[in-house]
Length: 78
Image (cartoon, rainbow, N blue to C red; front, side, top):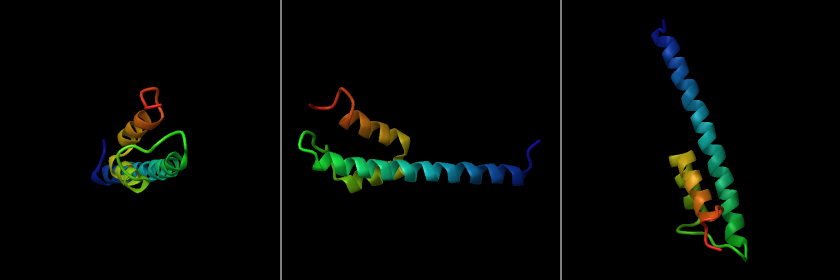
């Protein structure tokens, strides 16, 4: 059904899409973290915007969800 070339093509396509998603989320988190850091009403938790960006770049959507949970959900410190 699937030969080696087809499986390789799908693997490369999925890896490329995943890389783009990680990059897009990490840039968005970096921009948001800078805004949170410069905001008077909120404070950035744990690490600097660069390290949040790096964590999302390596960890992906789950780390981005953790960032949102810490900084923007109803569980965040007010």
